[in-house]
Each structure stands twice: as C-alpha cells, then as structure tokens.
Image 1 (cartoon, rainbow, N blue to C red):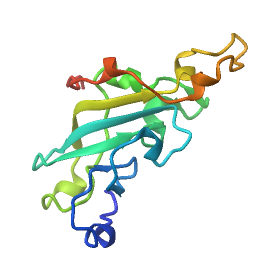
Image 2: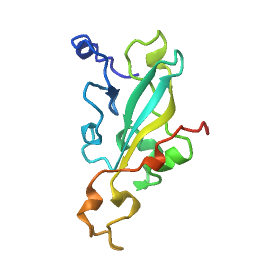
Image 3: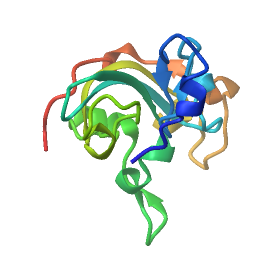
Image 4: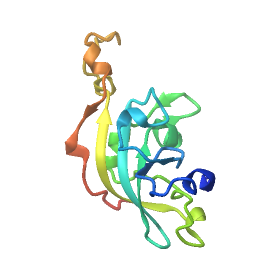
Length: 157
C-alpha cells in the first residue's frame, strides 16, 4: 500500500497528471527526466487501473519498482529489461496510487492496460558500447523513445 500524499493533493486543486515509481503525485507533464530515478536506463509511462473500482491512473515505471522482476538478488545479475516485461505481458505496478478511489483500492493490485510512452538508453540494448563495455557513443547515454513498445499490455499471467 502506498502513502496517500493527501497533504500534497489537498493543497492542489487539479488532479495529478501522473504518478512516479513510488506513487508520488506529479502535476507536470510527463517527461522521462522527471521520474524519481535520475539514473534510470528504461522509463515507461503506463495506463493502469485499480483492480477493484477500475479507476485509471498514469504511472511511471523504472528499475526502482521492478527490482524483483529484473534482477537475481543472489547473483546480482540482471535477468530482464522492462522491455522484456512489456513483450511478455508481465509488467505490473502493484498497488495503485492511494487516492481513495474506493474502499479497497489502496490494498488492491492494479492492472496494466497500455504502455503510453517507452524510453530507454541505447546502452541497455548494447548500442554505442564496445565489446569490452566501454561507451563508444555518448548519445547511447541519452533517453530515446521507442514507440514500437507503446501498446496494449497482453494479459499473460
């Protein structure tokens, strides 16, 4: 269950435009540079809904809220990228933002509906990097949008 941030939301008349990886309400237009993790290698804006009342939210994903899905903690090796979770339909945000959408909402799971924006640093795909891991192209460090992964989330479970 996420913090409600009602102290912030009650002071601002308009509803949040999106929520970050920690379900913090954001009132600016989405930008991959506005997520909590400034070092994110992949950033995704996804439309989700509360599993109980179906209220919809736009939320950001980075490696921060997908550690268990992307990494093997015992070996400290990366197993997957966020793009893999999109491809295989297993991208999950967890509890929806706690905005009081319904009595059960804060404790329910959410359902990912659609990837609205997908951004990545080309180094994630090995682009702009030598065989020894040295960055050969500084542009490989910049966030780049890939619209091919902006789609409905299939319900593979």
